[in-house]
Image (tube, rainbow, N blue to C red; front, side, top):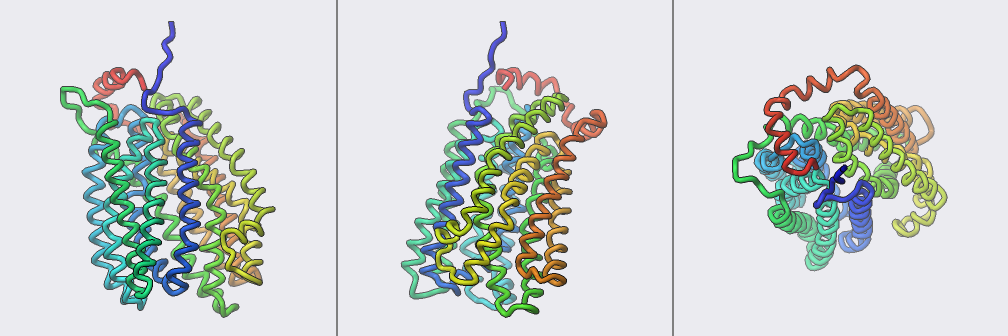
Length: 466
């Protein structure tokens, strides 16, 4: 008689996707709403200082935390990641501390380069969060690998609630001193990460898998880095390309329009924010795909693994396509509700940009899910190649369209569309090709993991084959 296997800690694929997508969407909505009171309190200058701190923070955060959840999830769900989270706590704890120290040490030089003394204090108050996000990411990856998306969704919402509450309260309390008001707003980010990490740690120590009496060796560092490093390199492509794009685009726009900074702000700060809302909804599909696909890929069942991958992609398409159509037709309403302060030509420009980029909410969502599928299939490096290829294409095409056409900032929107389309097609091609050349490539990647396979099989059997 067949015994149906159950997972006491996890949810089904769709339930997990809904949970994590809902958490991500609520988090994005709270982040968007947060900007309304923050802009009223800090004003344009204060928001400018606030935004000037984030490029360095995002790059350090990407290095220290971005690849952890998916990488750890992939290892644990494959059945070959015994103790991966314990090893990751040590490894990324050190990396997080280094990242925090780098941000602290660069605070004064960054303030000098940008010509804004207030940035130094802002960086110092924000830098501890680099470490805490690293630790929080390990916990999220552990539970995602177990098929439990609830801790990730809960901590994401909790982060935003604390940040919004503390940020508005502190910025209002120090509103008479602009530099301090901005610094206290960024301190709220650190407070939110500390509290969220503490709650996640309690969650982990109370819900983690019971350890056997005999010593279980932790997954080697190289097996963790094999997935997290490519994922980090993948994730860092976006902030780096955005930084370069902002410099290139603004410089070229200044030659044709005196409001170059404002034009780029409407594109990157407004249009992209709205376009990314549907993408945040489909994030859950990407996260839930990894523990569903990786066990099949590890066993060599690429046909079954790819079948689940294509199912994830189909659901992503069915969710993102109606959202894109809605964005196109409801662009005026979205502009009025979220960025009601824009008027006249700026308001019309934002509406036009949303309509141009509506298709990107589909392609970007598919890139997000397909990248997670590639990681689950054991090919994270291919996703890295895709992201950097599309990032270089996006910057180059933005420069060409602004410099040699009359599109102005709309050129950046069209280049984003092209870049995401290319990335989507590349990822699809890689997924189709996985396993077609035999198991040789995958075997090379997994050769070191075969050592001690008997012990791992015993460990998997003790977990009920989960």
